[in-house]
Amino acid sequence: MNTCGPRDVDLALVGGGGAASLVLAALDRHGVRDLRIAVIDPVHRRGQDRTWAFWDRPGSDLDPLLAASWPQVEVATPAGRRVLDLTPLRYAMLRSGPVYDRAAEAERRLGVRRIVAPVDALHDDGGHVTVRAGGEPVVRASWVLDSRPRSPRRPGRTNWLQHFRGWWLEADVPVFDPARAVLMDFRTPQPARGVSFGYVLPVSDRYALVEYTEFGPDLLTDAGYDAALAGYRDLLGLDPTRLRVREVENGVIPMTDGPFEARPSPRVVRLGTAGGATRPSTGFTFSAMHRQAEQVARALAAGRPPVPAPAYPRRHRWMDAVALRALAAGGVGGPEFFGRLFDRNPAERVLRFLDGASTPAEEVALMSSTRLRPMVAATAGDAVARLRARVDPTRRPAAWTVPPPVVGDRAGTDG
Ligand SMILES: Cc1cc2nc3c(=O)[nH]c(=O)nc-3n(C[C@H](O)[C@H](O)[C@H](O)COP(=O)(O)OP(=O)(O)OC[C@H]3O[C@@H](n4cnc5c(N)ncnc54)[C@H](O)[C@@H]3O)c2cc1C
Picture 1 (tube, rainbow, N blue to C red):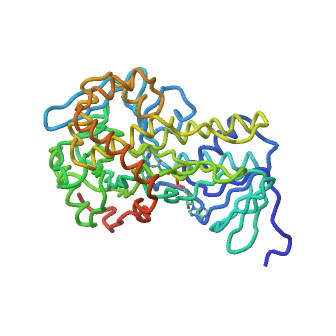
Picture 2: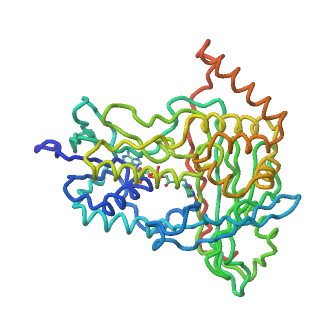
Picture 3: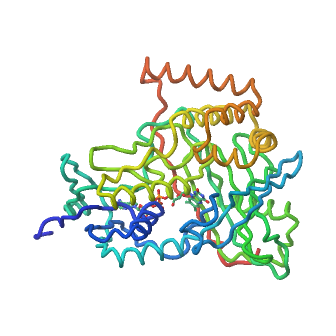
């Protein structure tokens, strides 16, 4: 029984994963020292549990933490391979360990109180938020930043998953090109429903993360991921007898036009995937989390409420809903869709669009580079589905939740 009652803090971070780690680092960077802060998470995240890939401009606070970065990337389809020069941007890779270490250092400087417990309820009375964990009030906060994983408020019209398995491969001889990453390689066999691709993120000529990804409605089995990844390794011409799998990474990310509520009550702000930072058409999340962490820290440093701008503009969420619908209806093939985008636009424009930073004129150019008929059909289908859901809410899809990843036991074995 908690006899002393909940502790008063200015800011409670509920969930201490990617989004919260970036907020802690940003608060430290902005020299915030006078806030009472608590982090409540049943797990104190440390070490390698995921790898973040994203694009940005060189010279950010992330530079010292990066495992690798590339000014050029490759996009491959059965029709051909293109090398894209991303300048002035770059593609970059961060392993989670340095991000969590940076957050731990920030926690020490900020005097953060850690509570290792699962939060089961937040009660916002408009003036304060009571955070309950294990059935007890543990903290009373002026503001809560909540990044606990959750499903959208209601299912979307398209509810897909980005699901993947990656192997960190170590080779006996130089086999990777550390000068460039493979962003998307659509030469993989395409599933009956959905899109598949592989990618390669090399940190040296002998060490790389090689991943197999699908966008689609259903997960694979453990053996299915291994077979798909082995197939991609073979497609790359890598000799399995001269490779070792050093680590395995599995993940599932929502790809849905269902709404993620960023401000469920006056003093609760949702961040990360829970707050809508995951781009529905690609699953990329990191850049939006990083951008919002900076906005939150700036606001708090200036004595303002820690409320970031929405992760993506509304019109981008609509365009993503249309793109997802077109892909799910099968009218547009993934390799064709992404191939045309990159063939007909400068890489920087596509990447800024995916970050939600493009202008409407650029978006018209991007949209007109996709095949018109299926996109028009998807736009019309989306409009009709919205209307129907408004007129008759029972037409909305049944509940939808994001399943946990399929985790095998293959780490550390020979490739
Ligand atoms: C393996 C993997 C690789 C990814 N790679 C990329 C990538 O390359 N690029 C990209 O842009 N995005 C990527 N993503 C997507 C996204 O960037 C990550 O999922 C990111 O970690 C999301 O941050 P988050 O804070 O929303 O969630 P998380 O990092 O998952 O943090 C959520 C936290 O909430 C905690 N929690 C859970 N329940 C409770 C509770 N009841 N009370 C309190 N805390 C709780 C969890 O323990 C966890 O620490 C990847 C995702 C995964 C899973």
